Length: 422
Image 1 (spheres, rainbow, N blue to C red):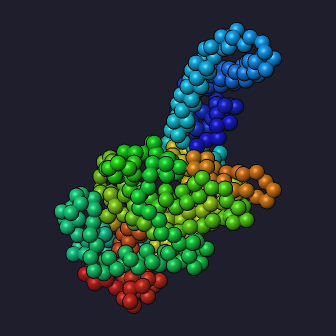
Image 2 (tube, rainbow, N blue to C red; image 1 turned 180 degrees about the horizontal axis):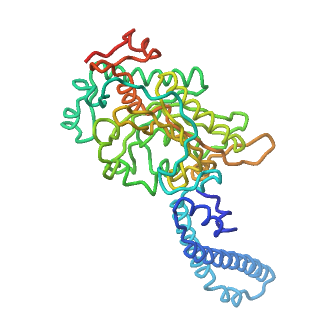
Image 3 (cartoon, one colour; image 1 turned 90 degrees about the vertical axis):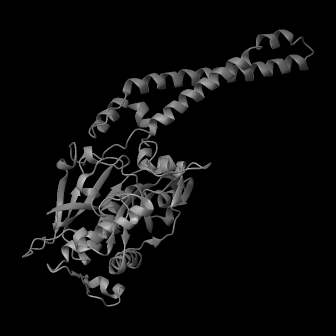
């Protein structure tokens, strides 16, 4: 969440900055509740002080053998008045706490202005798209016989998939390759995490309360959800902790399935495996000191780019405009891979710096030697989305006759196999 001090000190400036997102902050609502909070807090403290004073006077009167009855009568309703002030204060504070959870992060001043993805700014490109002497086919046609949407629909419904044979093996090879590079070369610690989380974990990283409709809730007595991304359980590993500054930065990588209801109409994106209810990602998470988070964003983005480069997949890096930023992000760099069948670039990784936005919600802090606890900064990004990487390999490595070349770096993971035959 945003630092409450910023809201109280200059709500108009916060509204201006957050307005770059296209988000309209209800300044009048906040001021009314904040004024009420202050009034009730002052009244509560005044009544508490009065009770302490009167208790001392009553005690002194009794000790001196004086009649304390008039003093006791004078404070007869003090307890009720104090209880009412406390209840009012707690109620308005709860309103403010709930409201603050709905306010998105402030975009970094360097984030370009814009309303949507059409206003995102290209940073760089790597490798020219392949020039085929045939009309490239899409991944669904290329994977015919190995990609079984009908079987998945029978057991789970629409927008699930079954991968068979060489396609499943290639999917596994991509996952293993990503994990090996990030752990052996980029310094990430691999973690295996729960695929089920509680409401507090999702509030901590910003998925709740805003995006509850996009989540798969688990019915039953417990208030739990399937994870929409490994970001949630991995980042929450530092929730309610004060870390030793000497241990930072922390770098975690996790491979998990992700579950999203993906409410809405996405048109052609629902054809095949580009946008599904269940998919897999290799997720990168960094926990860093505040003065290192912008450098860490560049490093993390570079780690994801390394995978694309070694797979020899053409891509571009885009800085998201303010209107296209995710709820919790202060700045995001998207990596978009070239898909020949669509003849355009599509998102395959989003790398974001959240500054202390998530840390405040999670109470995740660190302490330098001799210093006071301070909030860490959190970052994450896909390194990469496995299903979308699979699509990119199928389409960019097709030979026109239905066969798919296996990228050089994956052949050891495929038992030396160099092609997937039609």
